[in-house]
Length: 253
Image 1 (tube, rainbow, N blue to C red):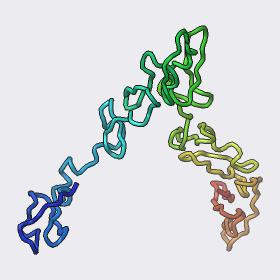
Image 2: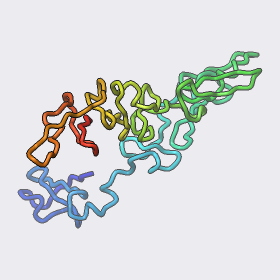
Image 3: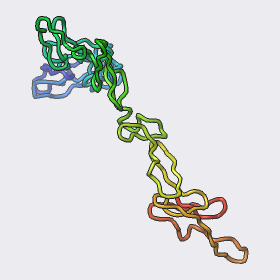
């Protein structure tokens, strides 16, 4: 964070520099200089010029990375009269005794002889459901979500990078992206979550519409009898490229 100081020279406050070594001095006003410890040549080696954190794992267990700073995640996380504890960077809300209720909304004094439903006192995380079986409370993840139900559950995937390279994130589930992506008789291969359609050997056509058997009728060039180029002109459709197979046939990809 730059520091504003008053220089001894009222016309050129940076001459001489009132700042420390390896610190950049800039003129803030005719009589005031600004010292920036992260503007000098030594900034790259100064820990003070780097963000305190980038992810929660850069902070102690009772802190979370918020705006590149390790902070207490509890403020603003729990309801009225609730208490908060931090577990592995996550705020855990609960109602202190003798209060009861939903700690994410509000905790209220219990009426005499009032026994709240067990699930009302359960500490289940987000995207979970509470099941009461004769007073035995169990937190479970909602259908289509995964994780620790006592901390929070999330979908199987949000981005393609959450899935293996041969799958893509479709409706928050990792699935084969080739299903329904290619045309009739075409083949499909997944490359980095993306389906790539192509016609098999000895087939031609638009792999996104249909592939059909290709029987080339080669023209003869000169006296040597060499076949012509089966890709000139190209038999492939738009946005496809023509390849010559080992048997001399054209294949669209």
